[in-house]
Length: 316
Ligand code: SF4
Ligand SMILES: [Zn+2]
Image (cartoon, rainbow, N blue to C red):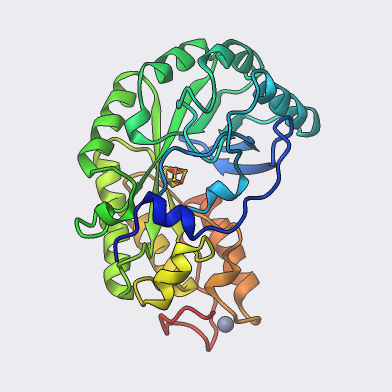
């Protein structure tokens, strides 16, 4: 069965109720900079209008609004978070969609938004490759620091990417990366581990690595690997139909080690809420900590030994 936007929306549960004047989350963390230094990062998860795309594996819509936030609300959200966060080197403004979708965040707000960001040497936002347009340059020109745009490449698997309803080809991604790099804007890519329709573990790892390599060839400086989770409605159906298998912690570790060994750019793995990758209470915390250390140092640490390892079966 083909799942189009209409069907994907039908299968959803209810969204979380959000206040458009308060970001739905914010946090302070650390990440390696591009010259081997450690940078402190303030990430603000803005409460914003739902993304216009309806990707099969996406669950970000759960924390979005049906309508654009009222004019001025995004500034209030940024102020709210900054009053509560320590100073940082880098700020990420993630809006669960596309920062340069004028229907989500009005370009009229750029001057006030950028006025709040003058202390940051880098500003990271998320955006769909097809929405990399003149607004990126307008916003970048208003910043004191450097702009970095994080885009979902997801996978370059020719049989899988078209089925994700992302309305994207690898060429679109490559064109957007070239446009951004030519405009002195850095690029980060999101790459999936175990997208739907890739259920063989070895094949899935292989395509994640191929996709990472492609992203670096496009001029991307950092790749974040996202283990695909169930729970958005359509993914749960796909799992029942055997078109989706949750990845395992073994797989995430293998991808991370192999991607770091490429030495083509920085690699991160998403460790947020990865409890669904393992049900081993003996080793999970130690293995998660190892991944976090590898994120921060970009070095491979010795494996955590446990009898549960290397079975390639997601444990949920
Ligand atoms: S483009 Fe990004 S935010 Fe929008 S539906 Fe796809 S994955 Fe979700
Ligand atoms: Zn274990």
